[in-house]
Image 1 (cartoon, rainbow, N blue to C red):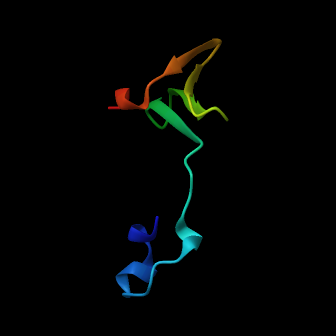
Image 2: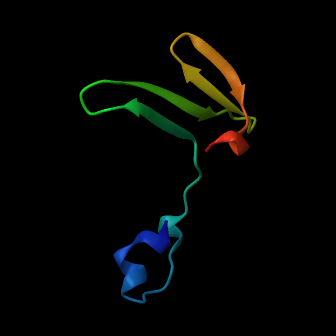
Length: 65
């Protein structure tokens, strides 16, 4: 995340404070007035699952548009 901080713009040195491991993604499809949410969650084993209402299925992150 360091590349997107004010510290980077100011030329300061990178810090481990900006290292994160992605664990999940929330997706919204629709408009501000109406839409649908679903999510992708990384399991402790490292695979990804898509949670979309009552449907849960395996998901390959390479398929993210």
